Image 1: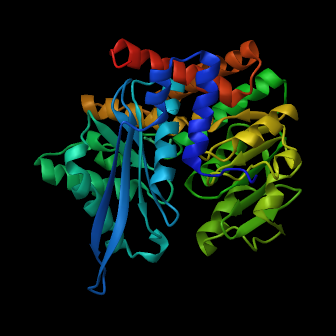
Image 2: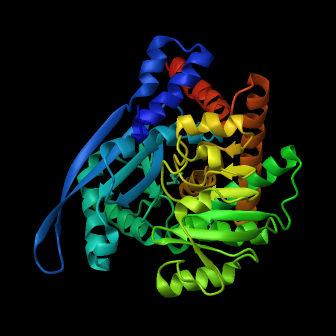
Length: 416
Ligand code: GLU
């Protein structure tokens, strides 16, 4: 039977495994298997040429036992209710792993933003907020950037929401530009948090990262920040990069300055001077110290997991590894830093942004970094210890930590 690749089914399966090991009662398990609320909206969009096109959007408020639901908004042609449900479930576990007082949610619009003009994108962002206005607020459900949405999209959405409310409401969304109440350090927070966890993993594995090799799959916002920070903070040599068009490889290493400049200039990493072409599939199987999947879900599956030669897989993407692949990687001694831990730096600084918005008092960059490091390091230790103690792979260990915390909150509230 071919491997099931529906992300929500995968998310449910991951929960099922943790629920069994935790001995979770049936009602709690069932409650955690499904979103508490999901909404589908249509957004009629006036295109620049005067025509109207109808877009489909989603928002899933998965679980708010530990606090307001929190999670990104993705604009992607393959977005479906199930991808949004999966992301929302993963956000629930993510906020619990790093122990911030938030629940999990996620949103999406099925569209190809590369085919939309700036003004069309603005109207789409504003239309989405109008469609969801009654179901969100800063104490209920707070959005943030994800694949193909950025600080500008957050700014438009914050503005639209503020217009509807009749006053400035910066806390409705995070990942805003700093001028509009965004937090210092938010743009590279996911990558930075991931780098902290790689630093910790190298410590427990006794690996020297300085001069060691890395490969980055996905060269969007997170992948580029990762490239810079892997060099700057870990002293690593990044030998391969890829994006949706293809990839490049160089044994001498690809400096961040070159990679980012080429991507900026041409819109892709392919054909970068002084590199050899490589496919996304080949990149995942390179003999490197750290492999960073930083694009989309389901890239390490049953069919290629056996060929992964990296010592550490640091999941900056959400859901890059399937449950079957997890088992194979674990058997082969590949140390996986699972998405719900590895990329939790983004939502952690989003939480800091909410706190700063609530107090209308803003922190210096150093304070953000130091608090982020403390949270990520503590979460890493907790997960690592759980994995060692229970003899399970790191993803399952992260789930054990997270699910227990969410289940406890549900119980204390008297829901189950
Ligand atoms: N989209 C990001 C994630 O998957 C950030 C979510 C947030 O900051 O709320 O973690």
